Amino acid sequence: MTGGVSGLMVSYRMRQKRRRLLWRSIRSRRQLTQTANRTDLIQKDQVLAFVVLRNEMQRLPHFLSHYRRLGVGHFLIVANDCTDGSAVYLADQPDVSVWRTDASYKSARFGVDWLTWLQFRYGHDHWCLTVDVDELLIYPHHDQRTLSALTQRLDATGAQALGALMLDLYPKGPLGAGSVGADANPVEALPWFDDGPFRAVRQHPMQNLWLQGGARERVFFQQNPTRGPTLNKIPLIKWSRRYAYANSTHSILPPRLNLEWDGPPAVTGQEQLSGVLLHTKFLPSVIERSKEEKGRREHFGQPDQFDAYYDAIGDAPDLWHPHAHRFQGWQQLVRLGLMSAGDWT
Image (cartoon, rainbow, N blue to C red):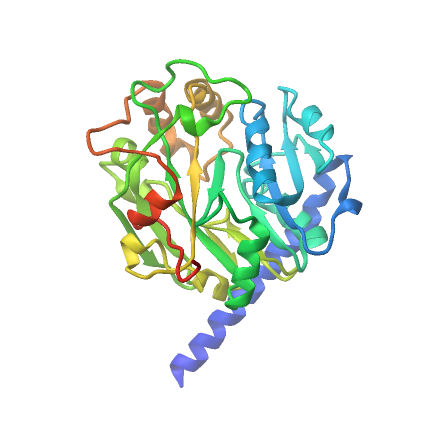
């Protein structure tokens, strides 16, 4: 009886938390200024992409090309404090709607409040993809099958979300060396990755996965691995206006959605259809961006605790090691147990 009452109280607290997150996201709409609204072009069955960015002109051409190739129907983008022409560039794209804001990224729950509002307003009953500009989603057969084919498969199996491992890519040699063109494929400049080790646990009361390990932990958080990056994400969800991401795309409410993915097969041993987010943080510009972000103090809840991380990136370490893998495609990641096709043949 006590367990039952306790469970009801947890459910009640999670519902209240979700309502608070939705309410603050609705209020956050006042911080957004519409600069190019083409949402009237959104069609019923389109997959929509939701993005917050700041000064990403180096990545934007390839980012848009990658997701258009996958079949994203419309991009809804918040340009936060942009000074490099990103917002102007986006406003000229025919499949993009843009909102601008100079408000605090950190105070908006690292942009999640703004995107939750846009998802509430435009994403209901669509499959919605939420990614950063340095994240390129791939999934089994992505070179031949669009996101529409993927979501049809998820619908057919009763799945409401696709989980993905965020996989850090890095160069061979010191960070910051060389240059990358504005329309280049960042994966070609960052072709190396670690295949583990990774570890995962479930967290309560939200039932969210906590997946850690990989290259950044190996290089930057070896002495304190619990501060290493969280690598599990749920970037693709059949959206309802009742939903709200709780911590980036690492966790979501209601809690049952967090149970849609148990983690990569290399960790869980389970073959469940999933994807990988190729994380292209470590382009040559990462040195200057890290110095800037350390000063802005907008990316962590307790930024003082991550000063050493920014400083370590500024020292331009070489992340490569003899056991690194060179990226060859989605089939390789399936073989390594970093994602799975399940029974989607």
